[in-house]
Image 1 (cartoon, helix red, strand yellow):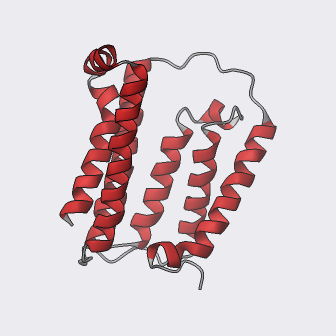
Image 2 (cartoon, helix red, strand yellow):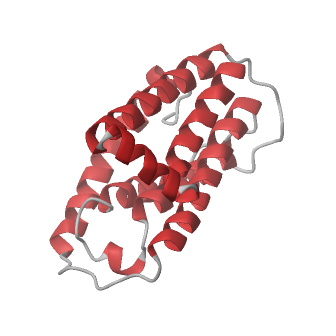
Length: 187
């Protein structure tokens, strides 16, 4: 579990750093340069992902609570919605008119689905932390950026693209979930 917790901590700290300490980020960018800063950021994120993956595999899950739901339609719908929102963040669809941070909102939906169906220690650590991180990230981004400005022209076509991409990724993840993560979602 220590490696998993270390990976989660690095992920959260690196992502929250610009919002929590914007002046420190600017100083670091000034000293290193924009591209080296982005490279360093990416290396930390890659390292955190590797620590999370290997930490997850090494951690022995312990019972924390009895999940409210079994894998099924509600958690699957939350994951599908989360994926659609995740991909909507890069497209100028109408989703952005209603949800300021679709990618982070998608992470919250994804983590909620997993917390509803998993009650073990490593699931609580990973999904609880990433859901909390996404909420904090929204708060810090809103504080840093202030009120939302005018939106560019938005397109239903881009919403449809997000639905298709999210749906395809959802289908692939559902099909390969047991092979990738050791837990079948399709029975």
